[in-house]
Image (cartoon, rainbow, N blue to C red; front, side):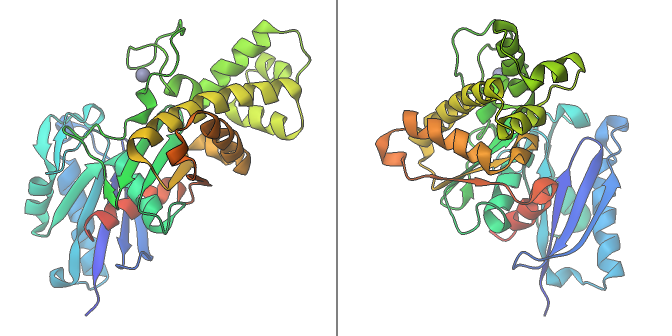
Length: 315
Ligand SMILES: [Zn+2]
């Protein structure tokens, strides 16, 4: 008999869904809108209907479905309890029970960033490893930590929140979390721009980035494009960025001793050069017992969430 599992990635505007086989091939991929009105009370029934509808369409029976995994934007503990997913209007809710009740099938929920890490380990940049840290360098810095093949969830589901590791004592601006000097303030896409603006202000050196700043076009991509073109000031910006990222990852390594760091998110579009900057400073700061960790780019992009969610139910 065929065996299937579903992976669901619940986001603030859309729900991404995938039908998988247990080997990690995606058989069907589709999306439905996230209806947040009514305190988000339509969301799980909508997901249940989408899963059941797909099963009918594909003539899949319940006894051939292993389960439905779901990644949720908020802290989720090991029992599937989400503690306030503010973006969705949810208070405290056990997703495994509620969605499982609607579907009459096994359901397993996790935090979306942690679930994405599991996806990258299953079929992406961390394939073949069992101890991995995913650092998602986007607007902020998110992450997920996998130890011996399992997500490090922590007591309240806040495990893997690597973006708010304290990294700098002299930061005048506040981070979104209220603290000062978090990793996210330097190693995110907005962080690269923050570093770039400060460097441009502090020197008179010629750089293609001055024009980008004037045109309101200064971005992490512009910085790394300039690095590849040999722009000296851009290279200094990348060194500072790499220093903060390498320092943060070295601190994480001292706790979890990963085999591989997988770098994802918008900043990772810079390519292999990103791994070079991160690895250079990682080597400088890390405890010698953790020096062998590899650096790889994430592969699955926005699909990491559905892959990881599907993998959740295969555990
Ligand atoms: Zn912070």
